[in-house]
Image 1: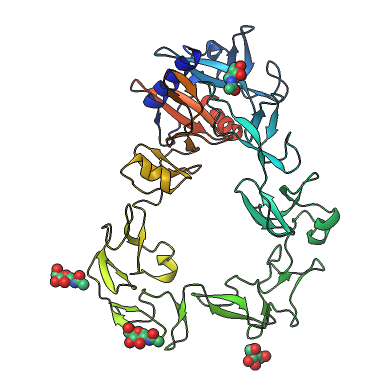
Image 2 (image 1 turned 60 degrees about the vertical axis):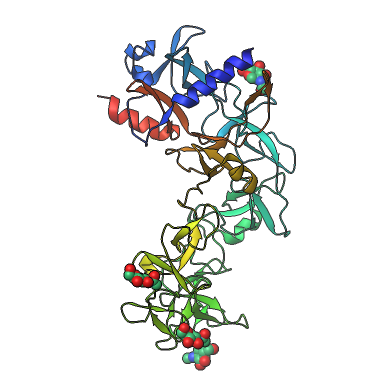
Length: 458
Ligand SMILES: *[C@@H]1O[C@H](CO)[C@@H](O)[C@H](O)[C@H]1NC(C)=O
Ligand SMILES: *[C@@H]1O[C@H](CO)[C@@H](O)[C@H](O)[C@H]1NC(C)=O
Ligand SMILES: *[C@@H]1O[C@H](CO)[C@@H](O)[C@H](O)[C@H]1NC(C)=O
Ligand SMILES: *[C@@H]1O[C@H](CO)[C@@H](O)[C@H](O)[C@H]1NC(C)=O
């Protein structure tokens, strides 16, 4: 029976909460009607804690919360009345483990066994005041021995490369297993990559900390260039990072030649070298051609065969109107080739089949979304990829809705529906606007504290 009541509450919340487009408003706990502590000096920083009737500083770790949790505002609904209460929550970027109730940093090994990491539990809709729960998930096995697993995006990266790390840090493994961490220090293997002076750790043969053009970060931990290196470009007599634009023209990048001993400028992927002026261009753009013409291959410009608002499909040698079904399959339409960047490549007249919006493909029936694309769910009759922002407001993402009631029995059956909720580390604030509930995700504490200080002090 409790489960059913809870179910109704969730449905009620989901039906009435709107997602505001990132508007900044006074937080509800600054309202004395909702928060008895708001009348005290600097009361906007205080929350009422019902168990002892006292006011405590918001977002503070420890007492009255356990030492690893912080006091947070929580909106609850009793019938149709909105109420504010306080709860103890894990700080941003951490989640609570159901095993011992403690908070652990997400995407680290946390309380988990070897070969596992602590990740957000997408299915925990247990309480109306949603908590961020974490569970131990199995790490992916990487193909190559030199690779390490980065749980945040589920990908494997080469060890001691920058990968997804901030500038000045490299990927290495944590103390207990193959879980990747971004680090820079002077110990063990990282020592060879540490430029020193607090400038950070960098891959060798990248620009790294080097400021002079044509210099690379070398294995002896200096910045320099040598004729012996494959990174040497003999016309400019400088060294460049492989894969960067280096000394090359637009449409080219600096790559190793077939022998692997010499760097040279070659056309970027999907570009072709036009014999006439020997530069590289993206096909189906104007490139070196006269106005109104498009480049079709290394030797020829043709007059653009398509009328306004139409794009060219090379396979069928035909033009189709943008936004129509054209030659595309179900729920796909004729769109621009988004891999082409107009500022760099010029406007492309190459048509591709794509989703109507880059956030997701429109589908007519629920099954269509579920069967074909298991990592997509329906939200407001459209199909979106899970764990992306999709149509949700800032700080929120699409999560799968699991709860489903079948024949009065509370089941854990997975449905194909999704909903918007705050990403880990963001705080959900629910307030009323024009007699409707609006939910927003406020980014981690620091920014909130800044905002409060700016708006409510003095
Ligand atoms: C739901 O939460 C309550 C208390 O918050 C707890 O006692 C219960 O075990 C939880 N249920 C599940 C399935 O996690
Ligand atoms: C530069 O390299 C190219 C290709 O290897 C070679 O043909 C050319 O002679 C070199 N030029 C100089 C100045 O070394
Ligand atoms: C390049 O395109 C032109 C015009 O479509 C065509 O006549 C020519 O055969 C093509 N050349 C190559 C090498 O494909
Ligand atoms: C372009 O538009 C004209 C006039 O509307 C039409 O006659 C012609 O067939 C169109 N060409 C293409 C390639 O669609």
